[in-house]
Every structure is written in C-alpha cells, then in structure tokens.
Length: 436
Image: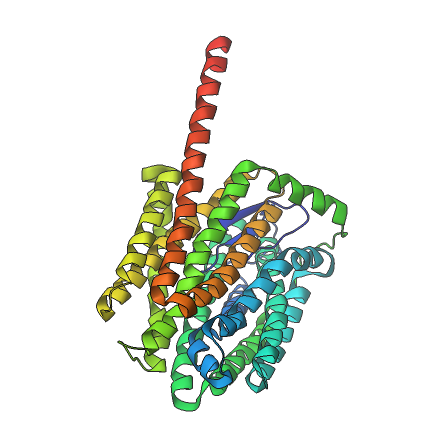
C-alpha cells in the first residue's frame, strides 16, 4: 500500500502482506529517529499497532462469509462483496489520498484515516442488511487507503536511513499479524457468539490499536507541506501506464491477487461444507498458513539472484498452479498442502513483481508503486467476487479453474516479456559492435 507522493522515489519490500513502497530517503539529519533515541520506540510501536488495525479491518469479513451468507440468505457471490467492496475502494483511493498527505501531512492523514475506519468498524456489526454492510465496507476501505499511503512517507521523513528498513519491517509485520489475527479472532468469536459479535471484536481490537497509535506516534518534525498539482500527477501516472514493462508488472500483480483473493474468499465455504464440515473457529485458523508467505516472500530475493526475475516468476506460478490442482482432492491434508503451495507461490510472485516496479521506474517511483498497489487490490476485489460466483455456479472446481486461468495469464505475460527482452538484446548487439 503505497504512499503516492508528488514525485518522491520509493523502494519496495516484499513481505507477507501487500509490499509497501517507501518515499526517497532524505539526507541524514540530527532530528531523525533511530534506535536508542527518544521517540523511536514509541514511533515503532504506534505504527505496528496501526498496521494491525489496518489489515484486521480490511479483511474482517473474509473468514465470516459463510455465516454472513446464512444470515442474509445471500449467495457466496453476493456475500463476497463485503470483502471486494473494501479492497476495491482502497485500490481507487490510494493515489488521491497519498497525494493529499503531501499537502496536509502524513501524521494527520494517518490519524484521520484510522479514526474514520475504526468508527465505521464499530458500526459494521449493526448493519441491518447485506446492502448496508457492503456500503459501510466501501467507506471503511476508502478510509484505510490513507493510512498505509502515508505511513511509509512518514517513516522516510522521520527515521534515519540506517534505521529505516527495521522500522518498515515492524510496520509490515503489523500488517501481516493484523491480517492473520483478525481472521482467526473472527472465526473463533463467530463460532461462539455469531458473526456480528466477531466483527464487533475486530472493531474493538482496532479501536485499542487506534488509541495506542494516537498517544504514541511522535509529531512530525521533518514534514514540509507541498502543493497539490493534479496536472503533474496525471502526467507522471500517464507516463507509467505507457511503459510496457510496468504495465506487464501491474497485470502480473493483479492476476496473482486474483488467484489469492478467489481462494481465500471461497475456502471457508468449501471447508464448512461436506465432506469436511469444519467448525467456524477451525476455518478461521486456516489463515495461519499466511505465515508461509512470510518465508516465501523473504526468499524471493534469493530466488531472483539464482534464477533471474522471470525464472522466479515461473517458479512462483508453477507452485501456485500445483497448489490449485492439489486442493481439488476431497482430503483435508491435500487441501491444506494445496493452500500452503498457493500461499507460498503467491507471496513469492508478488514480492518479485512489486520490487521490480521500483527498479523499473526511473522517475515518479511513488506513483509507480501506487499504481501497482491499485492493480493489486483491484485484482483482490475481482478475484474475491469472481471466485465466489464461480463457486456458487460450479463448486470448488470452478474456483480452481478461475485461478488456473489467472495463472495462465501470468505465464503468458512473463513469456511475452522474455521474448521482448531477447529481441532487445539482439537489437543491441549490432549497435554495440558498430561502436566498437
């Protein structure tokens, strides 16, 4: 989830949740935070809490979809909009909210975003209908777009360069833990007291995190307000969208997330039904498999060093496809192993694609990364909804077919990129020979 500034450079880290771009690291300054100096621990703890709240709220209904369907008499496709609406709104609002943070301040944007998202989160359990629930989730997703969009820029401005990676890592860890723990908490609370109580528990968790954030986050000392320049922003965005390689990377991120969104939106329906008949609490605990993503995204750098970027992508899609096929078996162990492979492949592929965006963009890297995150979460929305519709129409096999189609798209794009790179090298050889 990126900060899309009006022109700062970024770096992108592969992690177990969506990768986060970082604004350009300023020159060292005695006012900047680092381990051992006053404020650094408070800042780290505050952003860790904000990360937990963000992803716990964003995916709060995903583990509860079967219960939501039963409560409102809705199909899987209809209930899936409680997830897709939030991620879609986030995708659409990342760029404009990150631009607003350039004018009004990172800390102010984070505080406002988290406050609105938490207040909506406390209202969500009382939604009288599925339509109201989806509408509240749209508002919540749009509000959440402002927090991660500003957090990375805040860190880059307030933390010394040598301590920046550690500070970012803690925020990313909060994202991961929030996404996983929110789903697990929701699953067990729903089993005992119902899905409305589960959403209430997540809302209270997020409220506690917001209070911690408010009282712990240090005031910004190095932020300089900038002017909003829609024309310059549009020019930068247009330049990125006209770059063939960046377009391919955006498509790869969206397709990978289509697979992941489809699988994890629908898996609850598969596991609570025959032949597994698992209770809601156990289904929520399935999201512990996300921890596999921490390992595979961390290993992505080594894979690229050994196999190259495209080789790492081929390995990631092969692993994902193998997991999809394995999950077709009506054996719980096979389904769980399939989820492990899907998760490992997805996070590795996402880490490779997202980090490649920053390396490819030579200017306006913040906007380049923001566009990747928009494509990524639009893929999540599409995958969640289409996967649920496929499940309602043809069962788990149809959801797997959708996932395999998206995987085939990644393979096709990567093959095209490989051929394009070879063609460029062939054209470069005569030029180099003439110069010699």
